[in-house]
Length: 367
Ligand code: ADE
Image: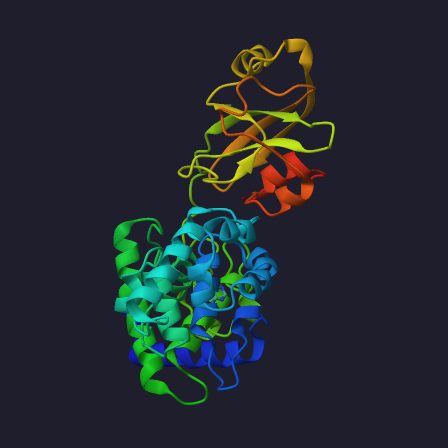
């Protein structure tokens, strides 16, 4: 078991490195009183739950500009919130952030300051509560995510399965001990929030999964994996994820005014509540005859426009887009609407839906 002295060295070295080398990220700005804004911290932590920092960096400023306070967010229509969430993926988070804002206003008046109250809110688990409570309110609360597990296992030289529940429990205990060390130190810029954010930053920038930059690491002198040359073996590489392919066929129809026909997805499941062209989905390949039959359109009315593979974090989606010169049968009954580009721009669209409805392609799919 690592000594208390080694833990103090790790904490001090990490905090000093973070003060020097941290990235300039929009949610790290402080207010006039030198503290972070709790609401902005809440929004950023929810956005960062399953999305890369680079993508969040793009989407954060427009979001907090449109909804500058927890009250503004609570009072906003959910469709506006989803529209500003476009491109971040995992839209369930936008819905729970919206409910979270409403509960904050109803139950607390403002963002609560401790992990217990934070964790009682929708969409806030132990990690997010710990991040906000430590970074904004200086509570010595631990945080553990995939990055932190990797850093801890390497520092301690422990070849444990990073996905096993016992490993998570072990890492929460370990992170808890370290954040308490940070809370007791309190000199030279050491604090629970700085230590936690430094751990995240180290995992993102230096102690990366495949090519850790040990030569730039502030804690290499205390790292067992580095000492033993095992930084590439810890944690054990994981097996390739099982990605089931989803098949989608979309029909693009334009009217004489250039408006496109769009429908809203159900409000649960993949891409919940987002707008899309009339679409069918299946676990197996969708042939043109099936599209024709499903939408009540003659096969000759459908021309194949585009076919591509779209990758979400969990699924590969094989998309085939057809153009049609007439609308599918029963479109009004199916809740479809003719929408102009401007109207579509205000609806909730993911990156794939944007590519299909508004083209040209907007880049690699993550949503
Ligand atoms: N990931 C989760 N929270 C973060 C934060 N506050 N800064 C950078 N990356 C993060």
